Length: 79
Image (cartoon, rainbow, N blue to C red):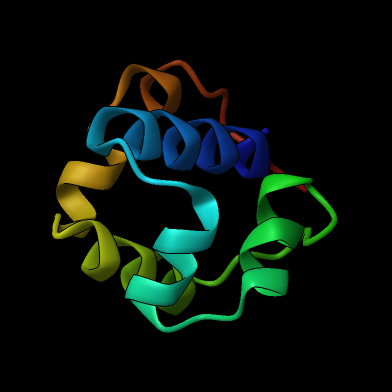
């Protein structure tokens, strides 16, 4: 599931950069509640603009964010 992969990637990047989720929320300019909703999988529709803000807060590109094994193994979702 894509939302689970985004959650995993955010947590991995926070661990790599040794920052908390709250610090990330502050640095990327989104509310702590929004980021916590993404992490807890309560937000089922994460927008690319939100992911871009997270990338900006982590000082990485969208390409770097999505270039991770967790995304490479996702199955195609057709509805």
